[in-house]
Length: 110
Length: 115
Image (cartoon, rainbow over all chains, first blue to last red; front, side, top):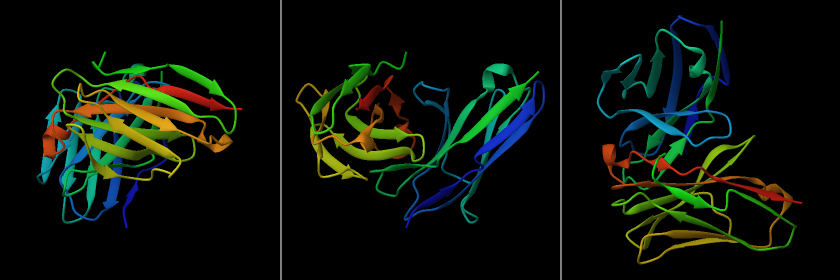
């Protein structure tokens, strides 16, 4: 079976750091993606990890541990505009399906 | 703007009806994906096409079908509509299905309301 777990909701304040965790159990693995989705809008790509370790991209970083089936997205210097849903998605081995978690809704307050 | 276009933006119809959703991928992208997003289910993968051929099926109902045309645009047909089919339908495209190239660019979505 395929299962991707993320917390449903998180809250944080402007300027803070937040870590959104994702655990997965999937049949095969060909990379893990993080997407950001504002309410009513299309998801937009944030990061891709296929090897273990940390990928840094500006205020956002993503980490992967394949042996643990675990990833996190780290958001630094939070801004109000970061209030959105963050979707963890795993690409299966054949590259035929991107399986999404249900998303974590992040609320950033001042 | 992702470069992926979808029409219509909104669609309101009645149970039992049939509708067609249209998607044009980014220029140069050969893979097209369809997703359904409802409040309680999250983003569900429906079906993938690559260069005109069906490549993978996800949780797509038998009442739903899709195709990708020679110009690479795609259509998703939903028939015998039920109240539960009300959702946001996204189309996405990528250069290639494999690995990093699977970075998918999403269209703005079609909001379907079945009354």
